[in-house]
Length: 169
Image (cartoon, rainbow, N blue to C red):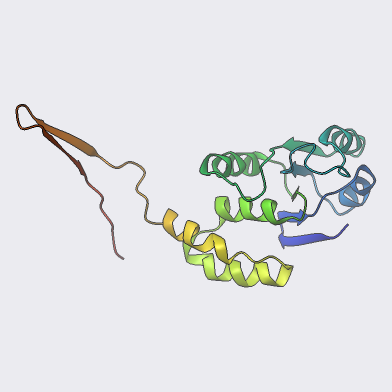
């Protein structure tokens, strides 16, 4: 098992086993986030096995299964809340660590730091270039976009108008 340190509060790893939990606890990790669905691979331990070992060593386990290559915005928002509320440091894991670091990056990395994310990811063995457009897009999405529908009776037409404002600083 190789634990990769992203920052002081967040680590990622490929699939861990119940035997790995003692080593993880010895490194000071307080919370494990499992992003791998149970049954994804024939050789993987299920989250219950990990949780039982974690409890013996004082770690909390959070189960947030995410299908490989299919991270949704809702899952990112859920991860953000789970991570922010978790006792730190946190170690998130999946089959290879890619889903775990991707969820963290999409939830926590500011658009201005996207280039640094790619560089840091490369040093850890993760190609995170594909996340950059999604992170940058987040910088330009208003929290709500007012939209209006205009229907003119008898004209057999309708128009939709949305107002989007960008502030350039």
